[in-house]
Length: 285
Image 1 (cartoon, one colour):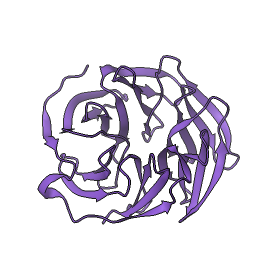
Image 2: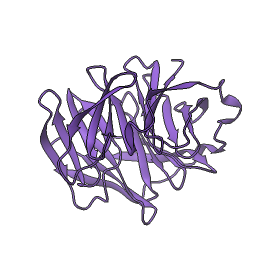
Image 3: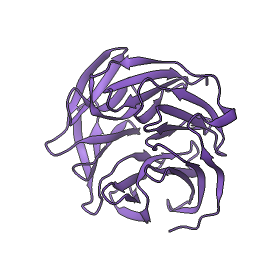
């Protein structure tokens, strides 16, 4: 395990304390029950549409073209279930947690071009992709409340960067690619690493720690602020790179699984487990 040099902010309440802005109102972008309870991995694609996994039934990728307008965009192969979606260089990448794959998909043909497979992974849960195509994947083992961190090269070489962690879940790179953020759901911690030139990570620091509820997906905006889904707390936090809570989005449901931002950064989307919905909010960007 990498060295730990301390925390910039500890034991925050779910509302974010005095730094919290006025409550942000949300609206249902996709209605309750339109997705399964496995709704996850929202991302705005190059076409401006919103994609998320498990629309209508498990094992699908849904495309949302407007408020209340969703469809099954792709049925994944038998044995595959998506959990996270990212785009890079026009291609879609899907963390297939039941198949132990990261799938590379060509959007126009909707064909799977490549499977990055590693049976040593418990699952690829969330992924983030560097500018050079390097994939970073969280890999929790929920049964033991433990987890790992993997790097996958564009050629498909897997490197285990860290093991014996907590339940690794949300993962995200800073806009400049120099920082990697990774959280542990059960342990309620958010870590930040320096990304080295060779893709390794170093100088691990504790960015935030919470007393209650859980953590799930994360995304950064163009200014490097981190949006964190607080599972069970019913909020999304907007956090500065220094670990300061800038604002809190109070959601209708209590179980946000992940967050996506629009291309202009002005709109956020939260996938909601148990509601099977996607809530939309203004970021105030």
